[in-house]
Image (cartoon, rainbow, N blue to C red; front, side):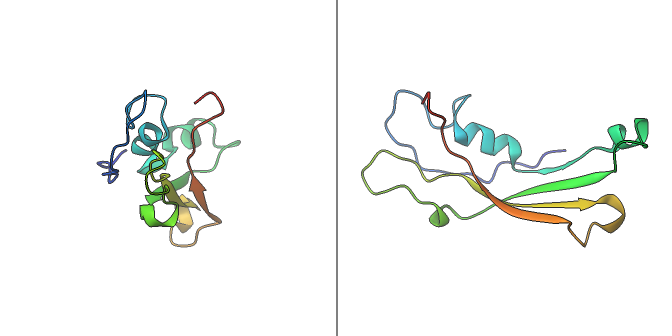
Length: 104
């Protein structure tokens, strides 16, 4: 299940539009949601627990681009993983920053 994207990043002049497929912003718009694996956990219960992974967008001021450098603010998330039976007690948390790869 996915929620509407909360990423209203400013645009910068570049060969590729900031939200075009293959860009960090495009991936960020896909990831910004709650994800879970109920079918996998049900069909392969001996191998997989039912988990929830939530990608919560962080403000762009945490990883800003420099003024005038043509770099967009880096999309970043607070990520929380929890078992379905203990959703209020995550077993793993972290911060993820998306950046363009070397081929960019």
